[in-house]
Length: 171
Image 1: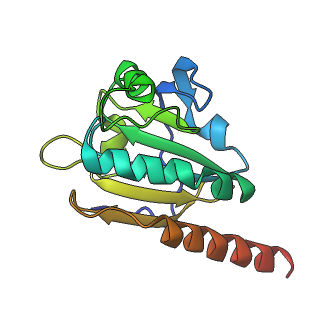
Image 2: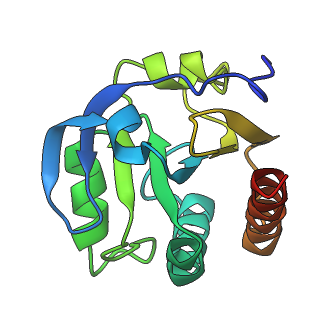
C-alpha cells in the first residue's frame, strides 16, 4: 500500500449521486472540496450488510461532520444507478435510505487504484482518507473487509487536525 499522507490527494472525475439525490455524470473532487476538509470513505459494494451498517453510521454522523465543515464522499466500484437504487430501496434489509452525502462511482477502478485501496478481488478495501483544505491527505486508514470503522475515531482525527491547523494559523 502506498502512503499518501502528506501528499496531494489524487483528483478524479466520475459519475455520482449527490447528497440531495441528484445524479451527475461529472462529479469533480477538486472543485467539490476546494478550501474544505474532506472525508473520502471507500467501501467494497452496495447492498451488503457491513457496508450498509457503515454507510448508515456515516449518515448518522453527518451533522457532526457538516458542523466541522467536512465534505463527505463515499466511493465504491458500483455504478451511480446502483447507488441510486440503494438509496431508494425500501424492502431490502440492507437498504441505506436517502443518505445526505455524495456517493461516487468508480466503474473503471482508477480511483481505488490511485488511492491504492484495490483488493485482489477488484473492489475497494474499507479505507478512509482525511484531506485538508489545501488538498493534502492528512490521514489514511485502511481496513480489511471484516473490520468496520469507528466514526467516533474519525471525528477525533478531524478534531485533532482542525485544532492543529488552528494553532498553526495563529503562529
